[in-house]
Length: 54
Image 1: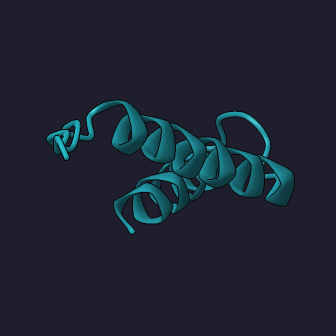
Image 2: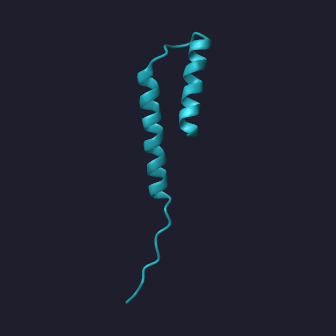
C-alpha cells in the first residue's frame, strides 16, 4: 500500500504548504493509476512458464 501512503502524503503536503488544491478526485485517480501501473508491471515481469512436451 505504498502507493496509497505516498499519494496521501503528497496531498497533505499540498494542504499544509498551501500549494495547489486538495481534491479527493486526485487521490482516487492517482491511486487507481498507481495500482493499474503495478498490475501492468507484474504482468510484464512474469517469468514465462516452462513448456512441457507430451
